[in-house]
Structures are given as C-alpha cells and as structure tokens.
Length: 125
Image (cartoon, rainbow, N blue to C red; front, side, top):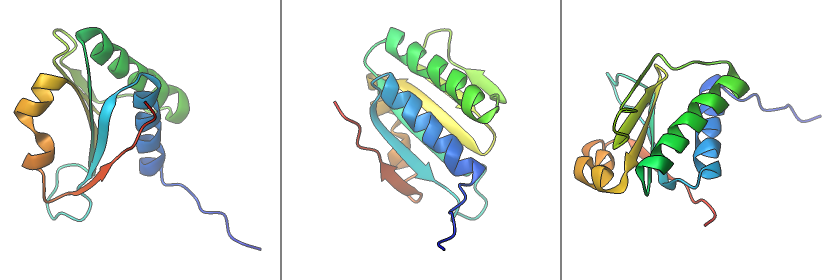
C-alpha cells in the first residue's frame, strides 16, 4: 500500500496563495524559494501583479480571506492597501507581494533575488 504524501503547512499555504491569485486573474505569478539560501529572512516570496488598483486590492483581499479560511493563518503584517501600487502581506515565513504592473517592473524583485529558486506559475487566461 503506497504511503500518502503529507503536505507541509508551508506548501499548503503557498498553494492557497497561488490559487487565490488565479481566482482573481493575477498576472505572472512567481514563487521565489529562499530555503536553500543561507541566512534568508523568510522561506519564500509569492509575487504577482494586477492591471489596476481595483484588481490589486481584490487579489490581496482574496489572499487574506482564503489563507485564513483554508489554513487558519492570519498575516503578521500588511501594508500598501492605502494606494494599492504594491501590497505586501507578511505571513512570517512566506511574504506575498501584489503589484500594479509598472511598480513590479520598477522594483523587479525577481532580478533582485535572482539567486533564489524561481518558479513561474502558468495560469489559464
């Protein structure tokens, strides 16, 4: 009888974040995995962007709601909801960044943290 693979809480939380992004039609989600980097301050960034302030707010709100509903985890810190150009949701080991497209290009976190393991997520259009 094959053993069931048990999902880690971290993996389950990241999957919930990515699913919530997909449900709100987020653009170009990526996961930056820092677990192999010595001295990293968190395990992962989950990054995406939206096409408007309204969409960025909707993505961020949906992530907070879905993570709470499916995992029981509340964010340690949230910021950026005031202008919704870059919303950060900090869950401690996992930090989520939701940008407006121009802000994402400007800050280019994927390049800044290029030494991490980067997973690009393909979402249906």
